[in-house]
Image 1 (cartoon, rainbow, N blue to C red):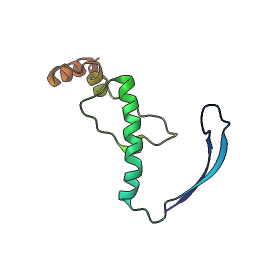
Image 2: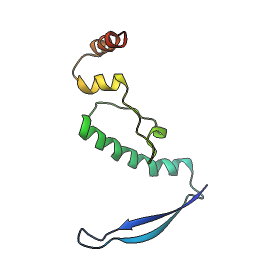
Image 3: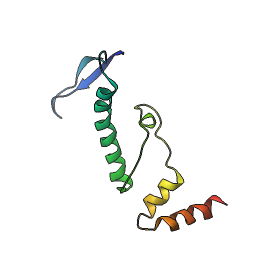
Length: 104
């Protein structure tokens, strides 16, 4: 696998000054399952933040590759926008609305 070295700034509390720490993360010996165990909580927390701002869905599927730190966030699809704006609208009506505006 790989080893990463990064600088982390940490303050003990709001009144304390920040201190730099050189953090080395060594992924040698990690299995895919172990990496998933590390990534899933970060993805879950990130999505919860989005849901708090944009509305909490009943269900959502994401690609982990679209949520890499430092990369642009994926754009919301028209289907996601309709589901977010009209969560109580039946699926058939949502589909008709999408079809109507995608033809223009």
